[in-house]
Length: 400
Image (cartoon, rainbow, N blue to C red; front, side, top):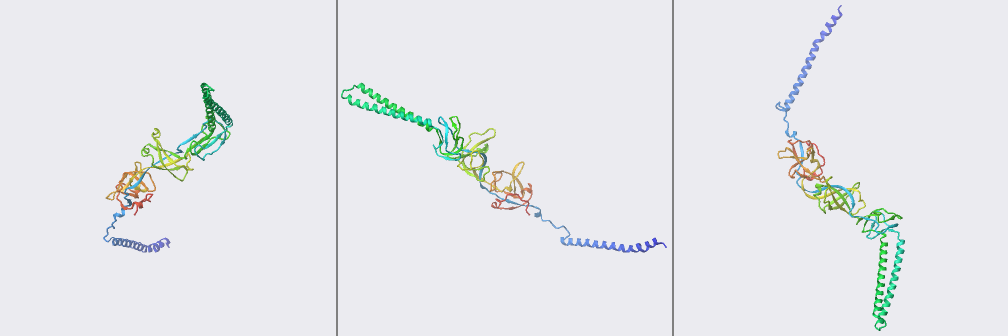
């Protein structure tokens, strides 16, 4: 018996017609499915051609505004140092000596002529007493000489004394009166010397610094003992660029903010430098400020000076683009095509960014999606009111 030939003939050979039928059935089913898909596509298209694409779906939408012209303040920003507007150094004006008392502290308000410190004066007081006594002696001599002259005048009419004697009495009286005047002048001088031992405020104001203590020996060469701000007035010595300096004038308002503070103080420019530093190309604009405890001389502060006002288009920050050439915006022309427009902008504020050059205010300016556009690109502009655009701060993407 041949087992190998018997297996081959009865098993594999018998299954071949069945395998061919299975393959043919799968092929027929696949062809039917393909025909069904093609029929559905043909039915949807209506004619067998591809469905048309709406061209507007391919054009991006952008938000634009027509900004018009708004009242815009011209602002100059500067930084500088706070100082007393009129600083008054106070020192020894007399002969000096040992300080017996210091009567004020830094930060005190004083009046004109108020005593700030006293110098020991015991010797000078005794000298004044001696001179006062000399005045009394001279006055007594003058009274005696006057009495003698009066008696001589009564006797000369009776012939008891000569005219020459009367002239001597008159001269003696005049000399006695002169000695009284000399003694009084010497006493007044001594009183003035004692008065100069009081270190006094030359004017009303604020004591800024104190550099003297009780027991200290001071002389006219001791330097400044007190520094005062006349009237307590302060100023900011603001460093301003040469171009900005030309736009400033005396009397224009300014706002000063000390470094580290969260409060600003109002003032005005009271003096503008007549020269410009040839190295830094800057000059000083002196801003007058009323006294406040937070305005400390020597402190650093920033200033915002309003140098004028005018009309300019006002845009949100999202509309302004920047590159190596400078600032620019995108505008949409009458054919809804994007154009680049180079501009010059002013000081950024909460209201927006003023455009000082490059726009008239009648253009359609892209305020959203500008970062995704290119010049010459076709767009669909959506007009937004300027009042609504004021709050736009950041650029957005294309809107569909």
